[in-house]
Length: 510
Image 1 (cartoon, rainbow, N blue to C red):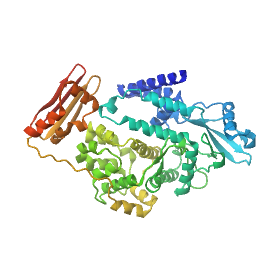
Image 2 (cartoon, rainbow, N blue to C red; image 1 turned 90 degrees about the horizontal axis):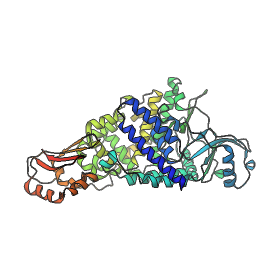
Image 3 (cartoon, helix red, strand yellow; image 1 turned 60 degrees about the vertical axis):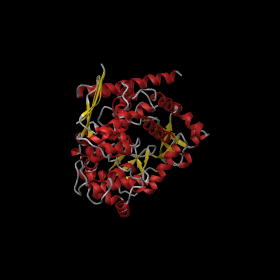
């Protein structure tokens, strides 16, 4: 109970530290807050450190880099009893020797060892009781109230937590990881890619044994010659494209600790490690994604709304920004739009989407399925890898080389299985053209959203939950308001204007 209490306190401190980052007044203060959060995250294995590794992304030189270069591992004397108990026999019957660990992670740590046949192997051992600790942390995390855009824009936080919990459960099962690694190795055929051989007879739910991999991290490989860096970049990109669009099983944890690079007399070799976090992408979603890429290139027509719905977007939430989707896909898939090389440093996606959608960018994100952040992280990882290597590639030609031609052909003719929602085009009278939503809250930046006027007839759909609560407290009946607008027409007027000492909600037609 004391341990659970301490973990709960640490999670609350994490939430407070993240709030300090959001509230930082300048970059110096923000960076200091990030380093403080990194130290806090690194102080606890399990969920906190896993969150930190997600924050670290693919950059070896940021505030969270400590979380990908490992924390202090457990001494070998505490690990040996776990191995002997799990294998059911003394270590000398299996291992000729085993070294202290220099690679501790969120769920376990890795030891270099030799089997009795002198084969050099990596023995990954899970920390005892880490599964119970994560389960307790997930429950405690559920007690921390949502804030910021998550609350304002009505994100489905339960689905995000479920996605994270399922992902962690997969990572906690090393037999599952073994099967995914074997499947990935047998399916992928990319030049320069190496997947370490595993030893199934020695693998258990809490132990994974594979061949020992040598190599340097991406930051060091980035100092190699331009031809070597180009070769590595092509291997990384084609691995992602082939695993995503052909195999449907993608390495989902692209931080620097999960890849090693070698370069001797032959072409460089890229070794992928840690197959616990894998992203499964079903056929429908793969086809929808490829269809959107083809449409952005002008190579086929697509009903964008249905393609996004097939990816798992909430159709009701997507409807108010449907008219922005043609511009949006040109931003999302900018690297694929031409056959020439693309410089990822020019891809200011977040700023471009913010300029296009304004505050509605949060609405778009809240409409996305919870597991989409894993896929986005994979693309972000690739972009960061290319930037680190200082290499520009032609994305579309390499995608075509990476996958079978029939897959692109199939996607050209693919139609969404999702039954399109019948677009409601209300027949209404009135001269108003726009619905304006202005929200001010204490200690928050004001938000202003502009929608087409007919959205006033479906306020229940896109108003965040906390606004609904204040509307009810003000005794405003949205159903009656909608009936009045249908009856009298959408004329310029104030629909809702609620003020208090801490907030102001103003909705009006213009």
